[in-house]
Image 1 (cartoon, one colour):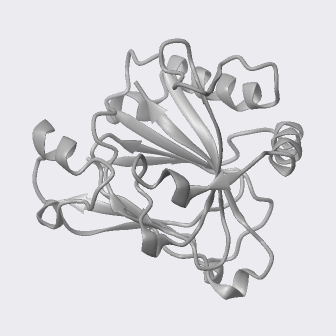
Image 2 (tube, rainbow, N blue to C red):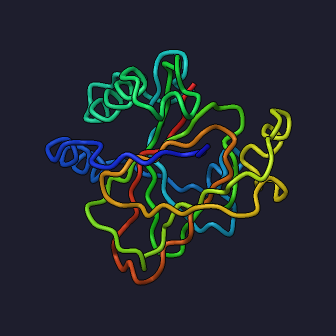
Length: 213
């Protein structure tokens, strides 16, 4: 049983362009300023994060509530449709019946990545790649740990936004951040992002990432 699913061509070309235009004007802030509340650590570099967006009841303090009246609603609506359409991964990843979600934009430049972690109490997480081009040697690869044993909820909670417990995985998979690709993760799955390399130059790994509830 897989702990993740990959959906390519998630948005139409018109929708993608609207999201790219929105991200070009996004007011990103330093991930290091949020280090106590996120999975980022000092050695992950200084990635940038955008405003948080969530459905009613899941919108965090100082965040925008979906619908926002912006192009973010395009992505939020597609995520909502994904949960409602009954595609196989909704059931296989244990997401049936979930209705709430939250997400924000992330911007990774050369030298930035994300250490191994789990997403704690959330039953599922997702990442959509919004950049228009990405090459394998630019880094920024999603690594997904294959759990060697079941993880109880207490163990998952302890590792939330901390190191993933090493004993929970011994091998795993990788997913390239291909443009217009959506990756869905089962809750509690160890994962990390390899640092973006200098070969990326002035390009950024752009994603919209968040959680289901």
